[in-house]
Image (tube, one colour):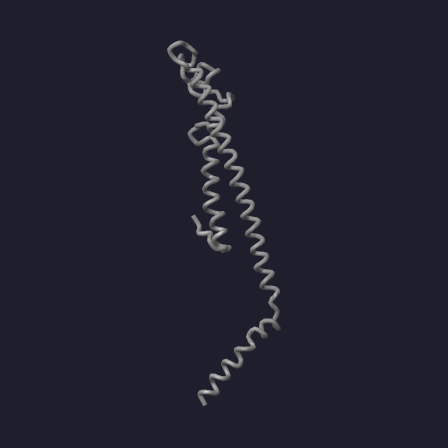
Length: 150
């Protein structure tokens, strides 16, 4: 992670382009279907995901088979409800984190843009007369050194 103890334009760019972007990519990877066809968590628990190999269309998230029916021996429906609730909370957390990091990236973009503009404005505000006034003391320093040598 970038050292952000001092405001440095290049470090802010690196933080935005690498650290923040890497987190966003990881979150999006969890929220989107992968190349192998594995559905994202949010889709698994929203009761809209169906697979052809699960005969019980009512209970797609876990595919528990006969265990999904409530009985004295097994509480499959309770387990399935708890898993859907937990999975839904995790999917919401990932969505919220993605929104947060997108806002952070937008804020960093804005900050970097303002810093670049301020830097340019500061450079533009230095005119030739001001520069000469700042260096006027150097004239005496250089001339006095050459007089001592004579």
